[in-house]
Length: 177
Image (cartoon, rainbow, N blue to C red; front, side, top):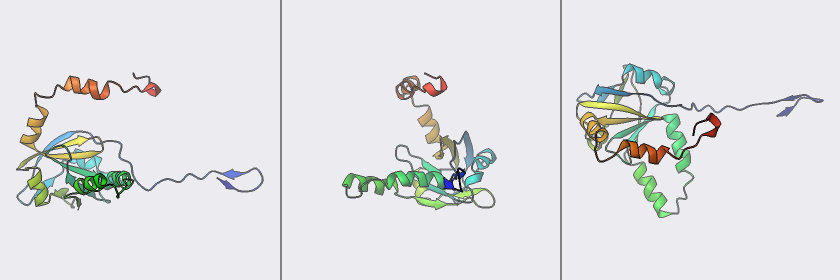
């Protein structure tokens, strides 16, 4: 708030120059060429348009044998959280080292292709056919066979998982319970 004279005030709102991605939607199949380039499907590329200039971070997933593509704005939000960790705690250092292992800054070229570095191709066992799957604010990049096996895994009862994870969320503000 800025005082502009007797009883007149101007309220100034500062807006961050970081674009917050709401969510990415969809699951897409595509192919990777011999050089490790994949052509982003048009509907996915359209959703990522705001992030094209800033670039992306590509990393190993923590829990699955896939890769995670972070728009730079989302990566920066994650790094802000990680930077709050006390680096004089060994577990925190170990986590940071493993979380950032293999991290690469990548860009989408003029033809809409993304180059996946060879070490990350090997980590995710990527062959020719891929699945790009939205994971709220990032994109997971899977070898198609691994993705299909993971999704159809009979060991996980999705109904039980959904109840356990989402069953206790109570959003009174929206009248949902």
